[in-house]
Image 1 (tube, rainbow, N blue to C red):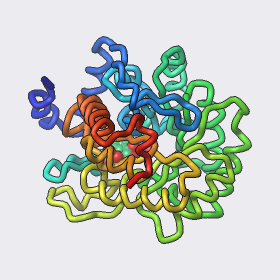
Image 2: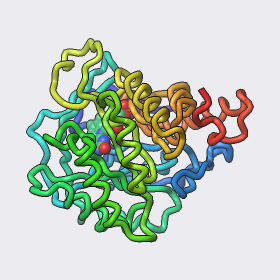
Image 3: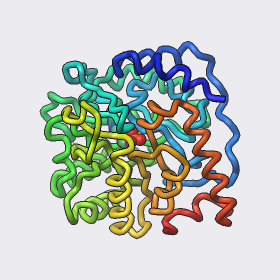
Image 4: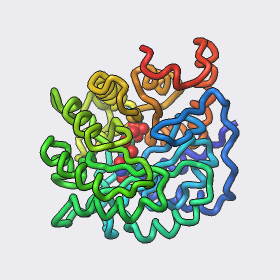
Length: 344
Ligand SMILES: Cc1cc2nc3c(=O)[nH]c(=O)nc-3n(C[C@H](O)[C@H](O)[C@H](O)COP(=O)(O)O)c2cc1C
């Protein structure tokens, strides 16, 4: 039985950012567990990496790479740490993270608060012996005069300690960052990233926003393939505001959780239509159970990630989804998860 229903009221009595810090602190004290044995039907190879399960932890929960091993032990098939910027930075003034409990959502405008890549590098170096997949999400400092140079620095610095890298150009909380998704800027960025990669370096994913205009997924897919990007993560939080009940609904920032689900699913379908399976896709946004994960995989996701649902459902969520997915595969007659991708 999960203890989370008992703990949740305590966590929810705290302001969300404090609750998050307390959670990381508690995880650090807890003994590390070996990752569970996943059903063989959930294993798949994506971008050359062998994923033991398609259910990963999305970026933003473990920004500073403090507990990636613990999160693998809780049953996530892969863990993405970050966003990490070259220099440490404090992020935006508080309060900057809001729980929208009635909507099963979160709004955040943290603004890449993180301890910087050098600190995280030291911790990640200690994880290199692990079999589990730890990806590193990199970004640009808010006051950087050359954002592309920040991504290049991130690729060079973090490649040795990352099983994959994610180029995050879709956070709504660093002014101007998302303009890097525009065609000219994106091509300049991806060309610089491509030059910075070592021949034997890790695969590189690109993380996009769900708030794109008509035709943008096509442009992004074309640029990504031409510049050797290994996968696209669809999507980050949204600046749009679907109907919400909570009093925090008008807070500025990126919205995640259940109200993002339909938008992120549509974005994924757009990227699948644009790519026709030529580049792996990672589906994220509003996934909170096995049905959501299954729907995303059928719509074209090779892998999925989640964050906000863990706030509401507790850390056992990864294992519950894994169980549900393996039952689903059996019921629908698929031998392996890879066979179910893009079959809707
Ligand atoms: C509090 C919070 C912080 C986040 N920080 C980051 C981040 O630093 N980098 C990033 O790429 N995504 C970040 N995200 C976005 C998530 O990785 C994910 O794309 C988004 O929340 C949608 O998934 P979800 O609905 O399962 O939470 C953050 C999300 C939340 C809720």
